[in-house]
Length: 192
Image (cartoon, rainbow, N blue to C red; front, side, top):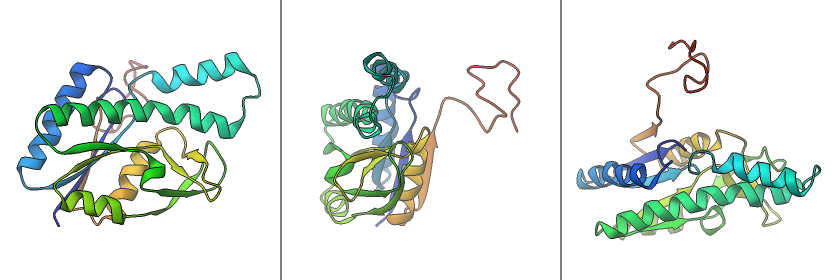
């Protein structure tokens, strides 16, 4: 099975117009006969807004509830991507971490992926589907949602590429290359 993992960051899925472009990229890989696994971040700014809301509720917001709250952003983006692909005639659906499941270990807000159950995703790929999977999260041995830290969707994509023996793992971002700092925030960022 020729598998490619495509990961889209928050700015790549930041608007519905950008999500339409993302769907075109995914469709192009599907047309090249790849089995495509998509990992998505939350839309740009959504996670920060959710964290802000948690601080408005409590200065000591529960870490386990924090993970449930902030993981919802990826759910929105994945649903929109899958919806656009379905609109274009492709078989696609969103997958939440617990539906696969993606098993994590460690503390809330900073866990790590330990295991990915491949059975359902392999079956969905064989049936011609394009799974759109929430990055940045998993579930622990208590069946609680956990997050794997900021930037965790990149780690999710890399782990999916590893577990599914993908030919390629492509991380889409809004910057070209690796910078000393975020070039969207600091003008003096230098490209390495």
